[in-house]
Image (cartoon, rainbow, N blue to C red):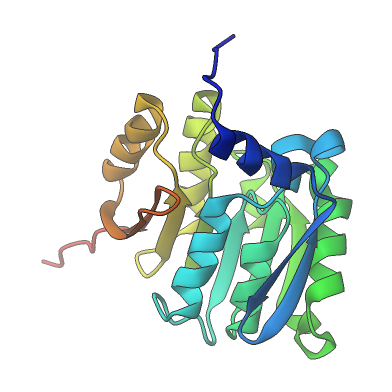
Length: 215
């Protein structure tokens, strides 16, 4: 077990994960996200990477209007909700055990007229990919952290993307293994850093498949 030095900022940051809900405003729409750290752990709280990605999208970092979007490891669903508010047709995904929690957050916050644009589906990385086709945009917030999932995550991203797909990954680079995943991505995709929020130490990377040369 790693010993973490006492830090008031770290402790206050952790306390917010134990709040039963947290509220945001994106696209002039209030969003109240339920959290459940006790029962679902990391999948049921809003991480800084999700908020930074929402801010990036809202500011026009990528035009989502009319696009098909899939969010991997959606957790609370905040990013997917914002993508729908920005005009995308969105599929939010996570593991089976998180489905009811995810559905509750999504449909309690999405305006009724946008519900047709949203789908909530279980997706365990690397499994059952034949039930999913290509998407215009793939979003992921703080999904790069468990090394044992990296191969399945990369396989999933590869399957979901065509040569026209844009991938946005928002993350903290906490350990060398996180950098290793980006190196794995670079074997299949062009990867560029497009944003860095120094206040919360979160990076956003944009990736896409290189265009094949025509002869």
